Image (tube, rainbow, N blue to C red):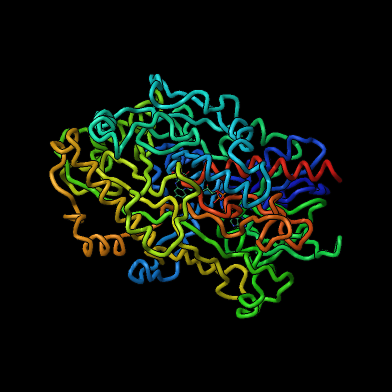
Length: 576
Ligand SMILES: Cc1cc2nc3c(=O)[nH]c(=O)nc-3n(C[C@H](O)[C@H](O)[C@H](O)COP(=O)(O)OP(=O)(O)OC[C@H]3O[C@@H](n4cnc5c(N)ncnc54)[C@H](O)[C@@H]3O)c2cc1C
């Protein structure tokens, strides 16, 4: 059941598992662990639960989601972005970032996952090893009126899982023009029917976590009423966890089976709860390392610097933060009343479309903010290879960068004009950043440093990616459509291109890696079974566990990590 307050949970229940964070991965874990009716599962989520709010439920409004559903983090000043600190969004609502994201669903390359397995020394993390978890999480669903041919490879998709996933449900006239580029420029933009089959390179139709025209989040899917009604599943919102607390020693290691938390906005009282088996941190790439550091599990030197007592010196906690740096390039296009700029500037049109959405779940509001993506390798003669930085991709079939295609301006357009935008991101960056404590106050925001563009490899990748986007709009099928670029005039002017990237670069909101796994017995934050090294009773299950960022949008990884993480917990339980 969903509770507003811990005081409402039936008295006397002893929780076997306490999951911190009812986000993307956390709700998957909660669902799977509560399949066993003999265990009691508690989820503590800091945010509220607001799935019916149209701004969350209507896919097209994903760029309008207000700050009240967000942790409102800001990075530290980024030297690679000309000293700018930037917004760093993370969902703070039941469903976590899956309730506020753009819903694009991509798994990365088979090589990404095979590298995880190799790092972990655990074939369960390989591409072959994760297939059962993809099947468990995915329920491939074609939207009304979409036949889906040329949009996916059926053998790569599960139809029996929990989360509805499918191609966009509304076709724009520009869609044919975009796909025509794969015929105009087949060497650079080869057609790829399905980027989710382990080989993402090429241009094709993207996939979305949308079902019956509405956003599917881990809350709407994994906490659907039939699951939330289980008598052994308890989800409490408005509960911000500050620390895990040592409760004793087992096997010569400190045990952490207690959480401290505050309930409600502005509350000062700290409450605590103990789990019989495990505490599972699913608080995300910032929340999970933040809680560990607050608890004295982290690099001793950094903890002492802010006056936090070290319980376990774990140098890798909070290290290895990686995100996909991105820029957006936009063009004014010949007006055809077909771009979504009109929706973004007309309240009247919005009202009409909302009615259509509500009555038939059709129309442009069933889409996110783009229908196509393309994934690319750097050319073999790229100056990136001369940068002295090791090529960060997982293998030869893994992309270095991605271009997303958008049928309008992202954000509020001017009063007149129609636009086309590309979002351009490195999907295999070399940069590595940190999450650190700002102070010993466990409720103070941590210091977030993604270290964007701190190396020439990433800069060269993004420069090549921007040039590629400009070549895209110069393709025969596009060039009659384009009027003029809005920002950067000429991407062959290297100085201007660098300045454009440093002045406008921002987050893709895909950070991973801040509590990463490594081989058992090797330095690192977690073992391959996601247990915190050097500790008993404590695991992390969210995208912070991935030692490299996947060459993909990261929610698919959250579902996969959640599914496999839950199985690993069950396996430990069986062994006990
Ligand atoms: C704006 C935005 C757009 C994105 N777009 C896409 C996209 O289109 N496609 C894609 O694949 N990915 C996208 N992503 C990324 C993707 O959504 C995330 O990588 C993924 O959902 C992360 O899952 P997670 O379980 O690791 O963390 P989250 O889903 O962020 O879950 C963490 C949860 O823990 C809670 N929490 C944190 N700290 C505490 C605490 N101290 N106490 C209690 N609760 C706590 C949070 O409120 C949250 O609910 C986007 C992300 C954002 C923010």
